[in-house]
Image (cartoon, rainbow, N blue to C red; front, side):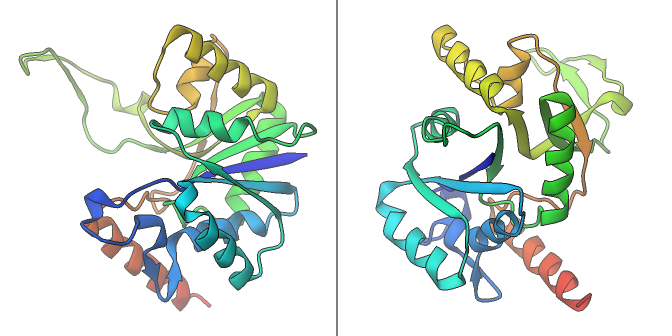
Length: 230
């Protein structure tokens, strides 16, 4: 059994919008609805857990009904930090779940085919994440802004979601991080903290996270291009 945890607790503060970013509409449809649709279309996924403010549960349930999504849905209250929100979602997994897909609700262009690719990979390696190669030159600097060294760009990658893990592995990673009071910027670093290998899947840079008005403009153009193909 495979579960998906979709994080949808954003407030939209950087979007300068009264509407939470995940509920802003692209071509008449909520950003989050595009995201959910990609997961709902994957046959291997049995349940979808949406982590959001409990104030949004009614809206979320109405949205699921309105678009006719078919998976088993659960709604879980978000935490103070992203890491807390993921942990809250992990606590609600079906006991028979073997693998967990963790994804940002504000990344609507992941696509079902990529999700299936991730599922195939995690069954081989237990932990995998989607990334894009870094195209910029990256400098390591000290606290005064002085360059220490230029990093080898060929070994550097920008990390995306989804991030996919064997269920017991990611649970252990979060529990250990909580014990250590270790805060990570993503879930894979918690697995790395266990000295467990994490593998990458190269993905398109189109899998953007919509956070700012500029991101929204890029998303609108990506959607236009996508619609032209059909």
